Length: 332
Image 1: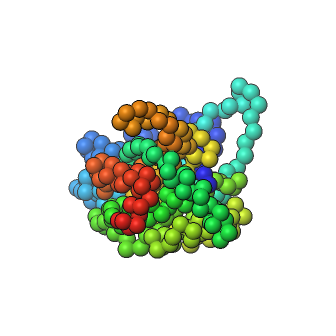
Image 2: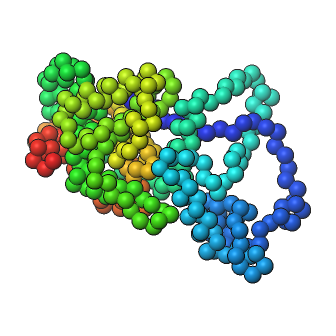
């Protein structure tokens, strides 16, 4: 089960029109340079802000209050385009037809929503990504040994299923990863439930169904749930509820390839685990090199809530759990 990096939203091509300098001067919002600089830094269009200062002048507090209103308007549905930026305000594309034949297709509904959601996540969250590798040689032997049992139950004991169990357990140990940042309310929301999102690549685009109460399910149950949700996603039968309420998501590209990538956090979550293709590498065992199957991992997180030290502790916990599955029973 894999995902594909979502495309960034494109603007409809149109002939660029010059903006009259005189008009921009006349309609400029009354604000000091320091206020305009603050607005640029936090992504607010100062022309949309109502000033409360003398003569309608815009203050820094006006800009901050407008930004809070914008953040609050997002709600839990993940609307993407920031209200502080007018719709369709991206730069116009050049006329590519001048250089050769082109074909223009409208975005599908799923692709458009994916682009909007990920644009919002990228613009809202200060992303940091850390990388590590897990030695899954022993895990792969165990996974192949019990794969048939999962298949009899209607599931597929994949690395994604194992990772879902590991992440669900890790969220108990690191509760700050099972949270959301309420910027408008200046608070942090800690969730008592543990739901894990699984990114699924479909012909219709990227979808992220959610496994409910993943911490309460064994590997067989998780394998069945993931298979059923993947089938629903590919059949375009997922409901909005199937894709809502996640604690943290997993994006596995290993079935396609690649050595590493930087997944975008699935807002309003604060972290996402990326998995790339495992490969055999020579590893020093203290006396000699031996071939071990190493799995590349990428952890992207919201730096507003999670510090680098906490992130690497979380990632190392995940690595150790994958390398020593007994850790799940010992600490989970």
